[in-house]
Length: 116
Image (tube, rainbow, N blue to C red):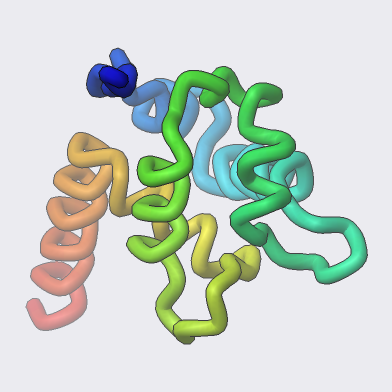
């Protein structure tokens, strides 16, 4: 019996646009709102089950269990099998190449100014 392979999801990175329109504080507020949508309310963390259950709210219903597990592993810095709010926000930044490049540029600019 053949199994259906999930094609790579068609992903468009809206984080840089959100950052431009909302500013830094607004972007963090929106990331926190996304965390709250995905988290297990009893644990206050995003677990695999809560991610699977709530991912359709963010348009991620086509991701396979393996995709979701990979995402969880990628962001789980403390190794507890779940994502806290900080891990989630860091993961969202890491998944945005354009925002990471811009952040690197801004950090370098700040360092140059600091050491002049």
